[in-house]
Image (cartoon, rainbow, N blue to C red; front, side):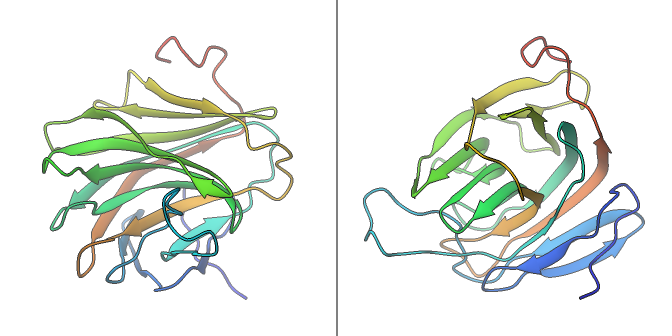
Length: 202
């Protein structure tokens, strides 16, 4: 199957998830529009067999260490509308760093790590403008960063998901309580290395 190609990425992206996202590429930017009631989150308080889902685009990087980043702008409409970067291993093992509208109606950085069920960690609120998000792989460790200017990066999550062979990375949009959410990803970058220090803002 032919994948979606972005100039900044050395690998194609394949769609998956349900309801599917609508994807448009324009001038190097990716515009994702989620389906209604879409939510890639397995609630710890929910039914054990439940597997909520959301459309996404992911690809397979060919490097053991890498840094993947993008600036995201969201047209927020409903609480929990979100767009973000995704690390995906299987339907029960994945993680995401998102720009999301929190219950106080403030745009915020949210991270989720799923090992069977999901956790949920809100990091910081923003003024509502575009936000840069980043996924880094360094050996068996992963790091999520966020930046309000694309220059100084705040570490918001450091974790492992164990064996990472076959890990896919890419983009996600979701609207758990709403009719859909549109996220625009631009300034997309990929490099086959990790920062020397994940905590110094570089």
